[in-house]
Length: 394
Ligand SMILES: [Zn+2]
Image 1 (cartoon, rainbow, N blue to C red):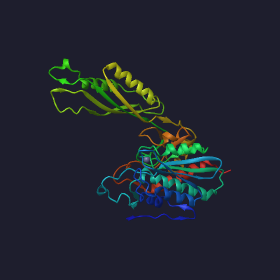
Image 2: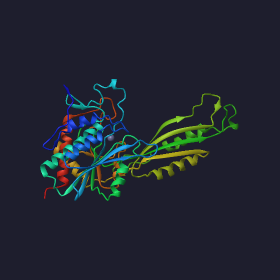
Image 3: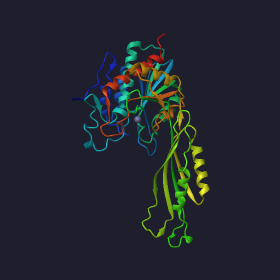
Image 4: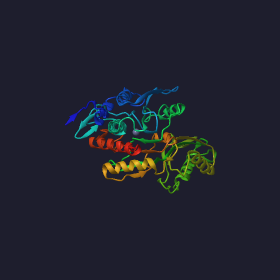
């Protein structure tokens, strides 16, 4: 059985499955918006939110549409954060449904963004609607949504700039949940309380070209490159920390591009990626790498890009409330984890305590991305319970 639900807002309640389906039908592959933010804004406006459409751009980057929506003007401000942009679907022929149709098949909402993370955004709106319906708009606090269209891409004109904008207006966030699909297999598996950092290094070793039969007249950069990579892969970087796995270094590619077996090349290059825990910073890792490479010696260049430092919100109020809401709704206690890739929580964590919890991520970025309709209902209830716990009735 398949159907394509339409959004209806009756009695100020939002149907999260229908809203998620409508969002999926806006094919907002980064950096395009295709009306996704406007749809969400009009839904939130109908609930009483004040919506700010924030378009940011920079030379050489595409314009990005972002949204900051807030209900209420005083008290503590609880923020739901996420992204409406999605990764490309690949060849639609490989999908069992049209990737942007937002179709419900056999109890699952299918389409690009269902899990990552239009489903969770729809749950944010539906949870806020339910909370307001039961408590009225005067709950002595504020609920906000910080939604970007630039998370899956370079993340230059997204969350970071929205946070700068908030700061310039004196706007405060007091607690935040990011709705990334944190659950590995089943809803309620996992809350993320931090993330590892990511450093990519490009190592270019210079030598002197020559004949392989006359190596004393040349200087082979490949041998030194191999020694350098061995020096940084021979032993683990660390043993892990209280809330993190051990850091890891993986060599992604080694490139020499030498077509001739009898020529010593002039240059050899490798790219590696380090996922690091809170025992390191990008700067400290770079110093460690240079120390190791200097010990091998010779001429080399090392280009470093840190796409995110590691961060942690130690178990505390936000993760406690979230865990309680999950346990009440599903009868399951989530693991508090720092595994996986990075997210926009890396920008928000310095503003307020933060935790991440969304749908099941099994199919994210894959063909036939999908989530159970029952999970969307349960996640809405979890987010609503979070609001109830954060703003206890007086
Ligand atoms: Zn995501």
